[in-house]
Image (cartoon, rainbow over all chains, first blue to last red; front, side, top):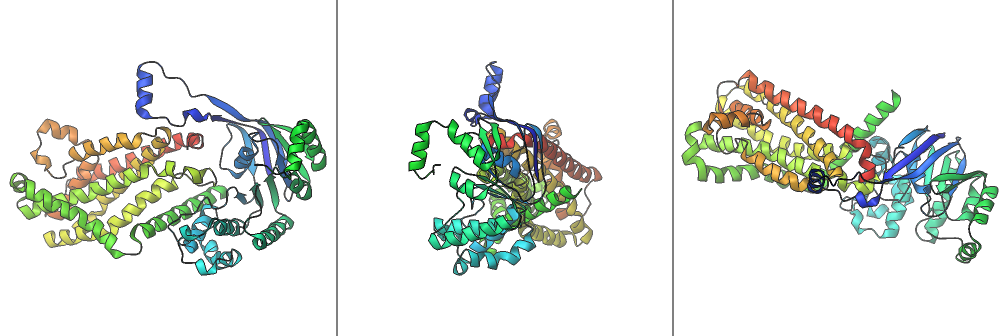
Length: 257
Length: 261
C-alpha cells in the first residue's frame, strides 16, 4: 500500500553543489551572499497504489518519474505533503550500487543485503542461494573488482530480488546479463510479479508497460498529467508527443534512455 | 513504535557490517596492522623523548616516565584526530550509495570511528593496562581507565557526527579541519607537561576537552594517587556534552543532506 498526498519536492539546483565555507564566509562578509536557488521537481502529487497492483510511471526524460520512485523508496523525503508506505520496499535502482570492490563476493552479498534492509542473519543464510542464482559459486572468495560488469549485474539482480519485498520499485532495465540469464531473470521477475507483490516501474518501453501493468501514471513536468487504465493513458501520452518523435521512437524499437 | 525498533535494528546492522568490513579491508586479516597502530605512537614517543626530555623529564621524575606520558598523549589524541578526520568525508563519499539505497546517514561516521576504536581497544588499551599495573600494582587504576576512555569515545563520536554533517554543506571542511587539528595538537599537553605552561595559558587550554581526558589517563597509569574527581567529571561531562551537541547538530542538518550529496 502506497499513499502519497499532496507531495511536493523542492531541490536545490545543481550549481550550488560545490559550496565551500571560505567562499560563504567571504560572501556573507561582503554582503554578496545569495540564497541558493531551488526548483520544484515534483508538485502536488497525490496517488494511491493498492497492495498487489502493478503500476507504471511513464513520461518524458526529466519529468520526475525516477524522483517519484526515490520518494516512494524513502531515499528522498518530500518538502511538503505526506507519504505512507506499508510493507518492505526493494528498489531496483542501479543494481550493485552498494558493492565494495575490495571485499569478496560473499562479503558483498551480506553488505548489500543489510544495506537494503535485511537483517544480517537472514542474508547470511541466503548467500549460497544468491551465488547459485547468479552463477557465481566459484567466485565466492574473489574480490568484487575481479568480476565483469555482466557478472556484477547478475549478482546485484540476484540480491535485490531476494530481499522479501512486498513492494518492488523498478527503474528501467529489468533484464540483465547474457541471453540465458535474461530468461532466468525474466522468470524471477514474473515470479515476484505473481507473488502478489506490489510493483511500480519506471519505463520508456511502452510495450513492457502494456504487457505488465494494469494501471499507468503519466508524469509530466513534475506533475501527474493523467492516471488510469494503461491503454488509455499510453494512448493519450502518445497523442501528446509530437508525431515525428513517435515515428522515431517506433523505429528505434520504442527504446530510449 | 514498531518502525522505530525496525529503524534502530537496521541502523545497528548497517553499522556492524560497515565496521567489520572496514576492519577487513584495512588489515586484510593480518595482526601486523593492529600491532603497527600500537607501535606507531611508541616510536613517536621515543623521538619526542629524545628531543625534549632534557626540558620536560623532570616534571615526570624520569625520562622513561616522560616517554610513557608522551605515549599516552599521542595514542589518545591520535585516535581522536585520525578517526574524526576520516569520518569527516564519510557521508559525502557515500553520496552515490545514498542516492540509490535508503541508509541511515549516521551509520557512516559511527562505523568509521568504531573501526578506529577497535584498533585502540586491541592495540593501545592493553599497553595502558600493562603500564599501569607495572607502575602502580593497583587494579583500581586499571578499572578507572574506563572513565577517560569513555569520555574520549563520546567526544570523538560527537565531533565526528558534527564534521561529517558539516562536510555535506561545505566541501572545504577537510581543509579547515586540517588546520584545526594542528592547533588542537599544539594546544593539548601531549609532549609538554601542563605544569610547564604559564597559568593564564593553562586556564585557556583547560577548556580543551582532550586535556582532562589525557591528564586523567596519565595519572591513572603513572601516579600512585588517584586523579582529582574534577578531572574525571570533566572527562565524562565534556565528552557527553559534545556527543549530545554533535548528535543534535547532525539531526538538524540531516534533512538537507539528499539535496547536497
